[in-house]
Amino acid sequence: MDLDLDDSTREFQREVREFLAAHVPAEPLPSMDTAAGFEAHREWERTLAEARLSVVSWPHEFGGRDASLLEWVLFEQEYYAAGAPGRVSQNGIFLLAPTLFEHGTPEQLQRIMPRMARGDDIWAQAWSEPEAGSDLAGIRSTARRADGGWVLSGQKTWSSRAAFADWAFGLFRSDPEAERHRGLTYLMFPLTAEGVTVRPIPQLDGEPGFAEIFLDDVFVPDSDVIGAPNEGWRVAMSTSSNERGLSLRSPGRFSATAQRLVDLWTETGDTGTAARDAVVDAWIGAEAYRLHTFGTVTRLNEGGKLGAESSITKVFWSELDIAMHETALDLLGARAEQASRWTDGYLFSLSGPIYAGTNEIQRNIIAERLLGLPRGGNR
Image (cartoon, rainbow, N blue to C red; front, top):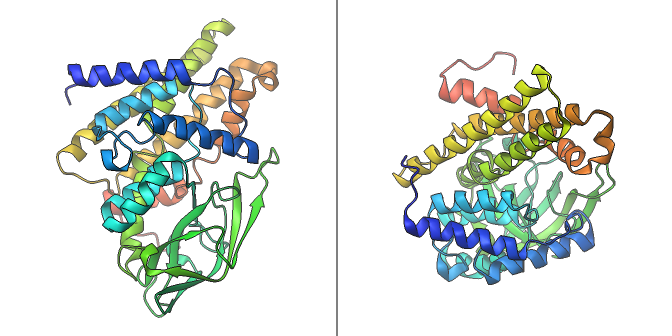
């Protein structure tokens, strides 16, 4: 693609950069995995929304700017370079929103999107279950037909942001007699609904970044079904493609980390070839991912879609994230304990090969769907 930006795009990039320079908090916000930090991050979402910068690629009527995909990538680049707060709304704006734009009804868009853009409603994922993690088709939570809607029962676990979120979205088995990938319905439900119990799951630092969700005959109206009943698998695949491929982990995140790593290497004065090579590899990896994303933007602009190739992207960025943080900790040595940003980032990076579908599963997808290799006989 042509990487020479036109005047309009450069003006947009300049505006974003100036806004962030003026508004990014001087001190980091409290952890979003605490009640106080969650609300502080919600307020930051509202600050972005007031400037129509919370969801720049969305239509104007829903709080966006109708920005192009290229402008969105540039926004993310500026956002991470400025050290802006993490997006507590990311499950909604990066995962659920693309699904709704593709499969939602006009009523759902009007009802849900403006509130999501402002941070009024923060969304949690309700995908994994105790016996169904990467094997999403193995879910057992059920949706039973009722007058005017559905009754949900079961348990979801490892639900991101659920400890303090307002709503959740996920798949439920609506036809127990159907094949594994059929008879599933994609539903949304409020976490304050009668019959919903949220049990936070503490992480290593004691903060509840995840939660279990128990559903005991929870009524959900038909208006909160995304797509057609029993066709939830097809709908969910559009969500997973965004999670693995383009929107959840934008290249700006890794470019900013790579630059911080280069700065750290310069500060430490480590002249060893191993450290130098590891830093260079990290920078090259981040730049390769950035350029790959520009290629993806070009393909999408030409009418293409995210498909199984998003599994390659997911494996790449998740392993790149770990490698960059391991290199930083090697450079810091005994001082790593004082560098909480790097140690916290390292601990989080370790989850990358697990969430959004484990990398083992992604490699199976790559082998079977992209390379045409036969399925393994022992699975």
